[in-house]
Length: 110
Image (cartoon, rainbow, N blue to C red; front, side):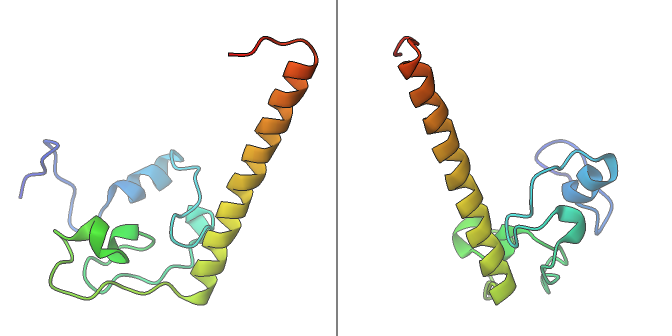
């Protein structure tokens, strides 16, 4: 079967495997918050991928997983997701504090 992007990957190989092999994926797993090399997500019984949000959310994966119930996040995954949100909030707060300092030091407003 041909991909809508114009290329095929061998069975069982995903773009994530390619990214990991070439070091191109430096973001944490969206499902568990761990480094992709240390992902703790279980393998999907339908597509056999690990750490793919499509496997958990019907809204994101209706085409591939329409005939089965979505997987449910386990406790460790939910903790990892919460830690990722906290880290993002800390980063946002830090950026806002830097912006305040910039304005206080005479920087121009946008």
